[in-house]
Image 1 (cartoon, rainbow, N blue to C red):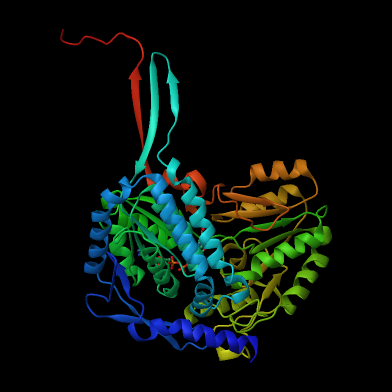
Image 2: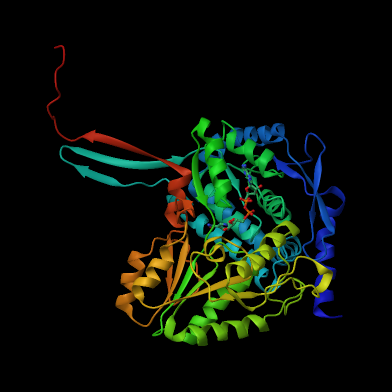
Length: 506
Ligand code: NAD
């Protein structure tokens, strides 16, 4: 049996649990269909056939989940940090034990290749372990000395929170958002994306089985415009942690305004990879190719704009084109596959539409630029693509395409590189390749983005802040930044001397 067939057989076996009952909600520890009985299908991006039916939540279901999270909050927030730490480590252990099942189901549901998804569970478990270890200190604050006054701060969990996640790397992203909320002492209602709900359900179940009390983590399924909207409007939900598109973030901010929701937004990106002639060009090519063509290019931090110094532009882009043409497109469960099918036909249509836009705008399609129609299953496969001779004012340079599509633009000097890098609505990440350390510091300081990697691809360090500027988001997470979002800070000021108090009316 080929490795692909072996993997397909295993994936089918793992999927069987969802074939009969469908993907149910998990509310207050109970597996529940939607109160209306309505469902929708999650389909395979490989062949567009249904994988499982999914409960479609109503406003009433969201209310039940929010009530469950509210009821569970007093007890969970009072659990000592040391015990929360132990429970979160048990969840991490259980994730590792089921790593293969998670990887295969994630691959099936999203179309992401197994070579990358095989690490999704491990990274998810690492997120849990990191925040587990910080749970005992989550409430700690600062001591602030003032004249005749001593101040001390402490933190307490904000309350039940809503977590809304997108369909790209849904498992890993869910752990990244939910682990710190639980470590902080918050309870959670999670709404995963409708295109990829399977592993989110698995994750909540794993947590329950690992000993997380019922109601602390509730997972609800459904569409953004009803289930997601109801969650952002619910008065018991104190904060919304959202990952998704910038325009959805705008809607959520408006929806949450009447209940004064605290929001944390991780939104889109059009991240520049800036390559100077003095860089280690072989490593720069490796990183540029990896950061756009891995994960099908469906990655918020993808290096989707390649800015290359004039003198090396032709050679550099020729090498990128050569690599892109060699990338193996295939079934996501084939271990050889790099690029699998995109998540859904609607998204595929969006990505394909940029090929016409590129032609109309006068860019050159150096490689790719079409559907990969001979790939297995005939699903949403798109060829790894490189646009050259592009200008930064073109739509292909300004808009987030969110596929394996790279736009390369030449620059003449550092000033122009900086101007181009910053001249987009987004400000999530940037990658900088140069051998000149002074330039790297100067350039990084002037970039208007939240995260910069110098001479490196995106390597996540969990204590470091993650998030973007401009249309790429509001707030940061990672390390203590996550706790700041999920907690309220309280200050106590104590007089240390008898200062003069104005006597009014006396
Ligand atoms: P999306 O905004 O369409 O959907 C994200 C989630 O929001 C889904 O669960 C959806 O159901 C929900 N939603 C939609 N409308 C809603 C509403 N009115 N109220 C409440 N919830 C609503 O995003 P997507 O297409 O699933 O994901 C891709 C996007 O996510 C890209 O723009 C990508 O850059 C971004 N992303 C950002 C980061 C980051 O860290 N900055 C990470 C991953 C993905």
